[in-house]
Image (cartoon, rainbow, N blue to C red; front, side, top):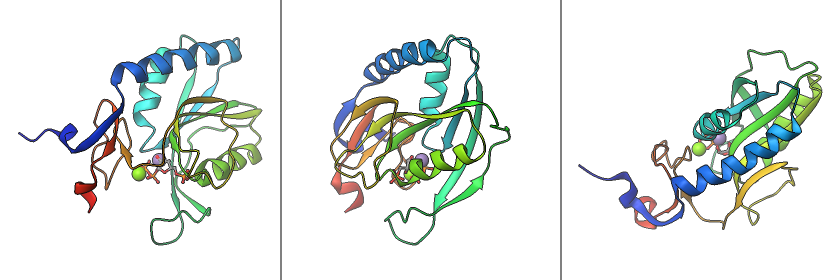
Amino acid sequence: LSDVSADLSEVLFTEQQIADKLAELARRIEADYAGDRPLLVGVLKGAVMVMADLARELKIHLDMDWMAVSSYGAGTQSSGVVRILKDLDTDVQGRRVLIVEDIIDSGLTLSWLKANLATRGAASVEICALLRKPDAVKVDVDVRYLGFDIPNAFVVGYGLDYAETYRNLRGVGVLSPHVYQ
Ligand code: PRP
Ligand code: MN
Ligand code: MG
């Protein structure tokens, strides 16, 4: 049996630290959306774990929907042009939308998505992201609910992947260079 977590050089956040942070964010979200029924939009696939835990932490009525997007262009660099692979099933007209993401890297995905949902007539579009890499951000994104700022390292776990691997780690950690070198 090979242990997935053995490929980490460092644990940044444990399962418990993530849960505590999501509880903190959930209390703010509950207060901000009191009397409303927000539409939580998860961005596949990285946001699956954040969505599952945040939604269950929230004590208010809400809807959940999902989008899958992909940046145009080859290579590892995001181009900022985003293609919708799977669209929402929900009409966002007049809805208060809360986008749920695992991480803001360059910010290109979220700045595009936020603008896109706003043009569909959402009453409001806010962002909840567990992680942000301030040193990698190319476009400033207004994140209402942020978990943690992290260094510009290769992080995996809790939804975040390297070549589709490590999403199932319970915590978030830095991937050992030996894995991708
Ligand atoms: C990752 C991550 C964010 C996005 C952030 O998704 O989950 O959605 O990149 O990058 P950006 O801020 O530079 O736009 P990815 O495209 O790897 O797809 P995945 O969620 O399926 O892993
Ligand atoms: Mn993603
Ligand atoms: Mg990915």
